[in-house]
Image (cartoon, rainbow, N blue to C red):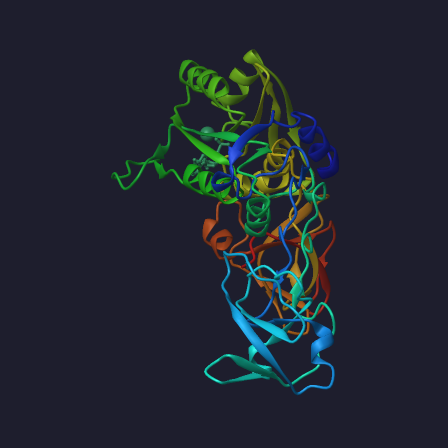
Length: 402
Ligand code: AMP
Ligand code: MG
């Protein structure tokens, strides 16, 4: 039996970073930068006013209230042709460039006009630089705008646009093939003949692939015979960066995934000290990593979380590979039997305003019980032993959080 840590580090060794590509900003959300990006220009490009008000010489406001001569009006998007002289003020709107001669802004709320707007009375003294945003206050030319290895957020796309960057070098989204296997599987709501069940792994896996920021490729169902499984896997490795299969990796006689992958790939078959998701096949076929997930629906999802997702995040350039973990209080007994394995229980985690996490069971814990998984937003990690009593602390892996 392999330990979880051994199995995870073996799987992470199966592939490195994907080669970088250049994409438009509009396509870059969530992708990871493959190089740092520096500013080629200053932001803001010129000193400008942070307020609607009057551009003045700060020295003229000493002893306020003072009355100044209004020399004109300046909106954002234009520059003043007139300098502001002693005893003068220029009506100015947020974002407009500071006129020559002025060194401070008085907000409009602290002024009043007279003589049909020809005069303005300034009610407060302002220091030099008041409400002025200097050129380069956000970024100077040469500053790092986004470092290498950063997953791009909406804020990053904004700051890149602010320095005129239209394309960015990133790691592509890994293309992830998802193949189901089994003679018993029926797609959609066609009537079930005796012994048949509905296929559920592919929809769930394609969804978690997409939700993780990768590109899913639906490879359909391969039936339990060698030619079909061979053809499906050969097609898969030709068009994907990583292939996920589900089913056919345990000890059954008709587990052809095992037979085929052994013949055409360099695979390792593992029994891992965890529950669910004990069996795992992982290796490389024609240079492409293949992760053979167990067939049981819950096992395939937990296996994806523990092994495939970290590898895919590594390929996509992320530095943080694993889901966040928090200590949580058990709302009730989370009992288990000692069996030499780490148990990943499907739980509902909730965060109280005082910062405490609490977990409660999300339902049935069998590896075939998808309803329990569906309700869960976290996995409670129960080390070998008797489990955690009500009120005890349990390490919890967060799967989804709003
Ligand atoms: P296997 O590893 O192929 O023996 O599958 C283990 C269990 O998972 C069996 O009960 C299968 O019927 C079930 N199973 C395998 N693949 C799927 C799937 N795509 N959707 C739902 N159940 C599956
Ligand atoms: Mg099967």
